[in-house]
Image 1: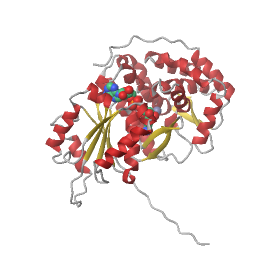
Image 2 (image 1 turned 180 degrees about the vertical axis):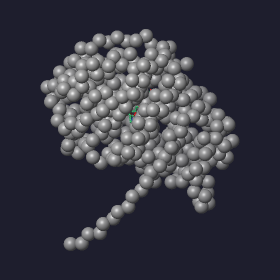
Image 3 (image 1 turned 90 degrees about the vertical axis):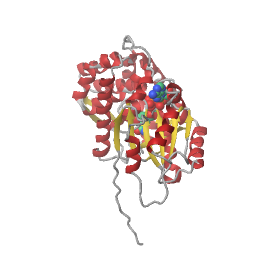
Image 4 (image 1 turned 60 degrees about the vertical axis):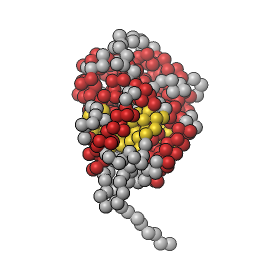
Length: 397
Ligand SMILES: NC(=O)c1ccc[n+]([C@@H]2O[C@H](COP(=O)([O-])OP(=O)(O)OC[C@H]3O[C@@H](n4cnc5c(N)ncnc54)[C@H](O)[C@@H]3O)[C@@H](O)[C@H]2O)c1
Ligand SMILES: [Zn+2]
């Protein structure tokens, strides 16, 4: 018997930029990002193809024209051979194989090569779907993500994963493929419905709970400003949340999730299941908020966190308007669903169940066993909490 061993490592580096008005004619950022990655030894010009979420184009009717004008001014020639399509976004884009096919058709018809760029402008769901299409076209074309929701700017759009849903399961098909760059433009957040403005904050609460008690305290202190859509506060929350996610990916020791520990998925085993069971009537962030309340309550029942810490968590979610969604937990306890959900999660992890719980505010802890009776009690405890919807700010401008 003989063995040949192959070994090499590849390092990744990408920037997450923060700007306002990406397609203003005087904003050099997109040109700089594209030029930075240009291979000057290639005799032809890179092309750029834009995938714009239809909902964004609806709220920002001048956008498509602005992109064309920007490219003419800052990237002459780039758009002459590539184009712009509008596609529906939201979870529908991850659930619908015909959308994925449209994305492949577009990248094919526009002749996007491995030195050209696909730019996706949309929420976390469309970003996941386009990321998957880009990562599997020619085994990977260059992707620039322009996330347009809070959740996509602070979490979904800045990491290394892409996916679509299949077999009624979230993210069943996907890749690990970092983007070339991410550009967070706060201008897009102005048109977000209040629901989506708030939903993304759940991921900030999540990462603060497992990594940063000071950030959790900041969220407690500024919940009211967030509720009334104070943009500088939201910009800080997005920036800090993104930084904590990026730090975990680069320094956590497992960027491509080869092991079973997934601290950034705190609260997510239940959240993913509830999203699917609700027929995606509940947003990812909303499901994450109740998933966190559930696992925090279980942590308390397991003697890990104090009553006071648990109460700080549920009070914060109350203040941010998430209490409305608590009833959706009932979806998880019908029949054997809870046991099945934990079983599926274990299967997804490759056989070893690993769930992050809370040791205290700011520190997660992995456990490998869940007492399902205690988990059912936790579900009932969260469902029994009040639903005190705070006074909402006006809808999007
Ligand atoms: N890849 C990852 O690492 C990762 C991490 C977390 C979440 N996710 C995925 O991200 C998705 C959730 O992302 P999301 O919360 O952005 O949801 P989403 O993409 O479904 O967007 C929410 C809603 O906002 C609309 N919208 C988007 N931008 C808008 C804007 N600027 N103005 C007005 N409306 C706008 C969308 O059309 C949609 O109706 C889920 O599919 C989740 O699984 C992926
Ligand atoms: Zn999430």
